[in-house]
Amino acid sequence: MTKQRMFIFVLILTFSTVFPVSAVFAHGKVTLESDICVKNIAGSMVHLSTYQPQHDPEAEYCTEIPKEGEILWVLDLVDQALRDMPIAIQLVRGSEKNNSKTISSFYSRNHSDGVIKGEFNLDEGNYTMFITGEGVPPLLYEFPLKIQKVNYVAAFSTAVPYLLTFLLLAFLSNKLLKRKKAR
Image (cartoon, helix red, strand yellow):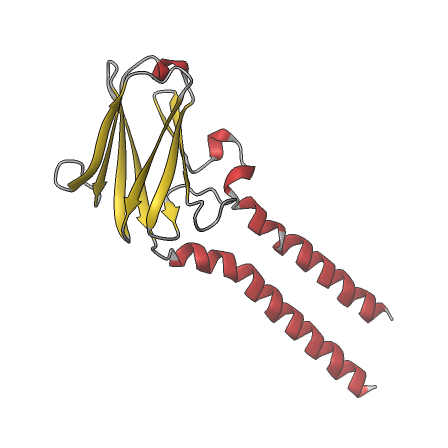
């Protein structure tokens, strides 16, 4: 009986440590300072959110967007200093501002509410969104966007805890069954 209790304890412990891991990676459940969609330069922060309501009305993305097509984006200017200066936004294919093809660019002067939003229609590939706060000195924020690209490192990192749990449970079940047969 104590072996069964030990098995159940290990099972509960394993599940309680593995399954919350997926919640940590959720975009909306972290502090602003640790959010991967926040860029901070000289104490001024911007937050980028992207959406594809035609595919998933509830999902919010940052820089890894699952499907090509229409992408709605919202840029939150967290600090008041950014709200008071002109903001230039440039989207390029690739990663270099001057050597890449510009897809879209515009200039925003009136954003006292701290929100700038727009939409792009993008094909599969890598893009970079450059946001320049035109103050003294200018503040340059850079968001690399991956459209319909699989991030194998993130997929592997997410799968590893589940795989390890499965292997541990298989191993423990095998040991338990062998001991029952030996009796």
